[in-house]
Amino acid sequence: MEKIVEQGLLYDFYGELLTDHQRQIYEAAVYNDMSLTEIAEEHGISKQGVHDLIKRCTNTLWGYENKLHMIRRFEAIKNNADQLLKVSENGNSDDLATDVREIALKIIEELG
Image 1 (cartoon, rainbow, N blue to C red):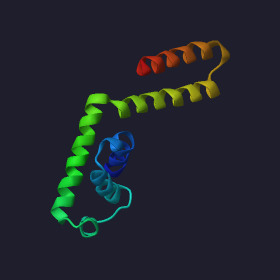
Image 2: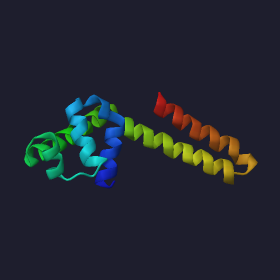
Image 3: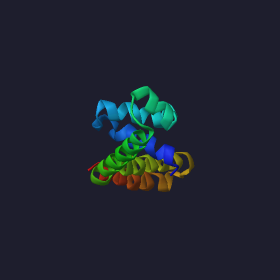
């Protein structure tokens, strides 16, 4: 996964668990695409401090994902929903009910 997309997903799922200061810095880097220098000047900290904070935040967010698996579960459910859509568009009536049932069971298992 591309690093910026990965950081965005992590933040979308777990960003609210960061402090206000961490969120401001992380958003500036990830969403506003500001340079370390720009962020440092805006927040009155060193460029190295910004770099370290972003790295710590990313590690913290990965720690949440490793414990909670919300992104993995979201992606599994999304893939199953995509399969349901394909089956409903392409399946013939004999196999459709069986295919839909199997995929629905996968979704229920992910949610359970």
